[in-house]
Image (cartoon, rainbow, N blue to C red):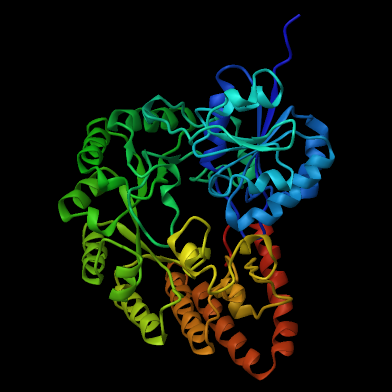
Length: 506
């Protein structure tokens, strides 16, 4: 009789503000590693846009499939819900393994929240050994790069985190395990199109803990990337791809080889990337456009020179302007990220960023008002280490005091629920902003929201602008009346969203 395969469930925990159009790359990579030697692997993305699940629903699912080990990705914005889920799973007798950015930054913390062990850094090199050790098939002390409690309750660290040296050797993500129905319409271009081409980051951005996975870039070869694009294109019919790395063009020769390969092989695809303002030029943008690049994301972050200097960005305001204009002129849509609310900034500093956004707006297809577009002091960052004592931020992620869940009509005005739809970070008020700073930040976000409406049809754009204007005026007159009158509007939008298969209605 053959042995029953070990069953491993990999979970991305629930969130009130995340809606994924594709499965997170991390759990797909781990699933691929475990799938190869024959483990019975299941994946559960609780934030899949077409099938969002609560902690209670996940616990019921676990009771049904009875996995031997559960691995969970821990990221700081979702950590309280993740720990709630872990405690519920532990009550069911589950064996829990933590990994991901938050687990790597504070590896002992999850052990006090129900987890049996924590993987530090990249999980692919040790995930199989970790599963075996948790099931008693090998000594825990023989697993390198993790943290666990021994039989006496003492916390043990087994060496430094392990990095994948040659990332060309990694398997392709386990796309075959994804249920397309979980992510909405079958035509969803993001379903299978995420790619990574590098790992690690030598930059010293004060707001980022990107050094988590190494301070040196490790690059996939151009041929490896082309092989995966071709495979996914042929197997799934995917013709739209997105590179998830932060700075794909740092190795210019490699991206040139990739583009030339796409052109030479006549791959009829489009793709998007994120890169640095100081690692792009007109010639490279032209080549990327000819190879099908349709979008470039830039982390401009600020229009205030002093802020750029203090957060260690390698570009100037003028360089940012030139990069955005060059991208548009090359026939590629630039998408731009900014971060507001650094603790040293006054109203004039925020105004400088606002002015840059206005100046760039004729060239920018879309501004990215992400959750972290208002500064969040994530653990492991220079910002957190420098200001945690001054602002009482020690372990803030474990408390409700700095909650920035997505705004709701029951607690927020309609206009703020739209302008800050991904997260009410101003409510968290990490750095005790003045009223004037908050008003200016809202003004900037409002401008980005209105600008992004330009991609909508004229009638839709007009209606949405008028709703924002009316909500603002009504809220100034009576917040209570505003919420009462806009409640049916919110309900109608939610109904429309369900009918349209979770297409964006914001």
